[in-house]
Length: 149
Image (cartoon, rainbow, N blue to C red):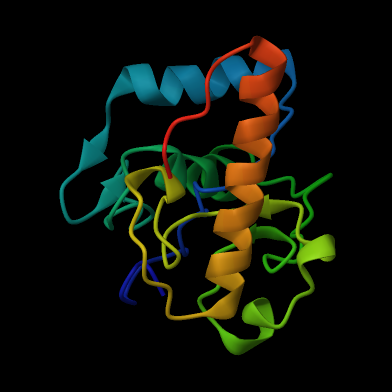
């Protein structure tokens, strides 16, 4: 767990997050940030939501808002992280067919643009190959010369 335990709510994974708040909810989220009541070791408004890595950002703000400020829970849905935000960080995600993966979080597999040549997992090699293929297609469409790989 990213929070290390001892918090009132786990963080939202900021690597992939799809939100469509109402105008009122967006204004309220902005008001929380502008209010600035984030306390070191205690999180947002001393709630114990957010005293972890990324807690001052979207990773703590979203759980704080939807659990404490506006705890309606409506229209919330958690999606399969091996399809949306696959990090190749567990056996189930590494076994997910490439064709089923909609979104990748290059953490365990490293960012392909930093060109690390080693991959611990086959999925990382496949994801990097796919990323470079998409990049090459865009470069061709834009009339750019391909960089060396």
